[in-house]
Length: 204
Ligand code: ADP
Image (cartoon, rainbow, N blue to C red; front, top):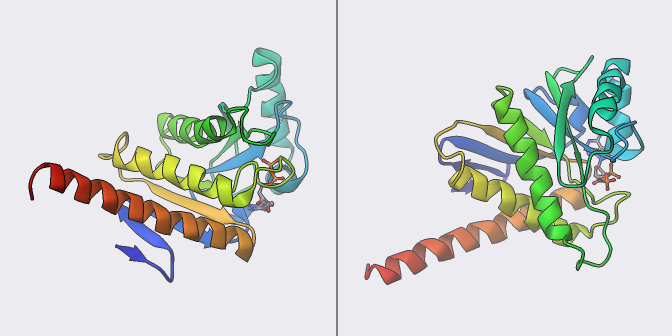
């Protein structure tokens, strides 16, 4: 059941929700940063996270850079959250939108899945995500939102069905929120379709 007012949904053991707000204020164990491959900070949510968290985050990013070089799109690394309330920042690099035939959806889905994986591996049970790639990287919001929502929903249904997680999408304004709300409604319809398909096959 979706609580439409709060846009909150129970999925197996987990709670999934959409909120409008500033991700730097989140109290979840981890917040996810839409970083760039250089890991040296930038504009948008990246700039906001480095400003709110302080220089400790950049220090750790520099060490990671020295070890691995550029972070490829679709992958994720973890640092402290510095002065923010969260414990960790997961930095992931979204795809730059080139029209949709350069694996943008697969890379975007990978950002969410790799971020979730590294957060859980570090003991996090509550994670906040921004809308990756839909700012400077130009991914159309109405196409990015279903990729993001479906990737997370599928992993809560399949991969992490026994782990109680709190997953929040923290969306910066009402148009971003509305696009994600629409994607959640479509995902619910897809899930309902899957269930009724299965029941039909089984002769229910
Ligand atoms: P990208 O380079 O991956 O496109 P941006 O930071 O430019 O990343 O934009 C991604 C999304 O983050 C946009 O929807 C933007 O409105 C949003 N955003 C910017 N600042 C914040 C913030 N403090 N909290 C949550 N979302 C934010």
